[in-house]
Image (tube, rainbow, N blue to C red):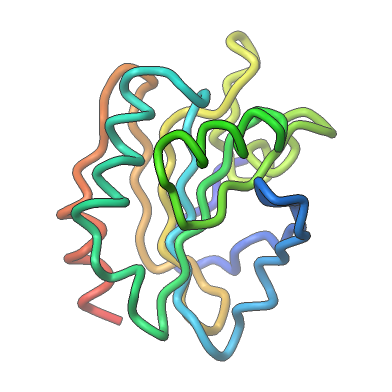
Length: 152
């Protein structure tokens, strides 16, 4: 079942590329969260999207915004990719149970075995305020994220 705007975001805890547990509810009351699901590390479109977030998304330096990216890759693959590309944001591994968090947000593709391109902006109260889900080959426009964050 897909998560819709206005609903409470499903809580989760996943390990980042450094092995540190990150819990969504840990940001309640202090940060708006940009939650970005993507199919696979090292793929062309995913690399382009995450490099754009690294280079063209200054909102992640604000004290009230946290960028969390999620894929089904292992944290070891995410660490290697993060180090190679200089990603300073959290890259969360939804490896096991395989795709469980992506499933809870309604963005897991059972046929392919990975997440589609889903983005959710979650406010400080844990409520989804904006979302977009694109098919796997179609990149997202981070300008849309910036507009949505500006309304919070």
